[in-house]
Image (cartoon, rainbow, N blue to C red):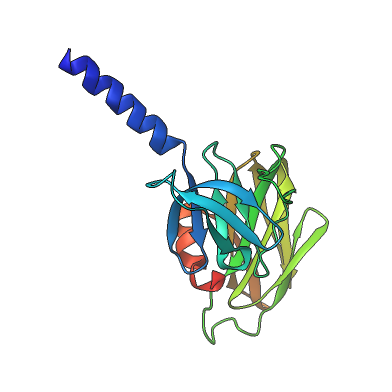
Length: 199
């Protein structure tokens, strides 16, 4: 009987933990929450450890990402805007889109003179220089990211709905000078390397 009770309790605890949303702030702090409302300027939520407690709010401009319990995500830019259809009610990322974060670490003087534009197929995304960071949402499917300085660099990625991808930009040497480098970074590396850029 005790084993059955323990099993039921463990299942209930797992369901509670797996049903929580996660707010990731731009300073790297994380809040386990249940999102109640995503408004024009702020996000209202309840803390998971006190679901019957007060309703808290946080400015969208302080939030980098919301990971919802169903696995979808909303990524916000520096002004707190999200490219997903978020209005006054909770609205998760459209199922047919993926989040793409393009960034270039600050390499110091090395390669600082090499600046280039990044495209998704033929769509212009951003100008990348040392310390650049850009977030957007793109339709799912195969996308070829490309940039050209002296020579063309391409990176083909099959974007899956609801997922987040980190494209790490850099510079590599060519016979004519610095050329662009585009690499698909693992999510944990991308989060770590863009942490300071999101502040």
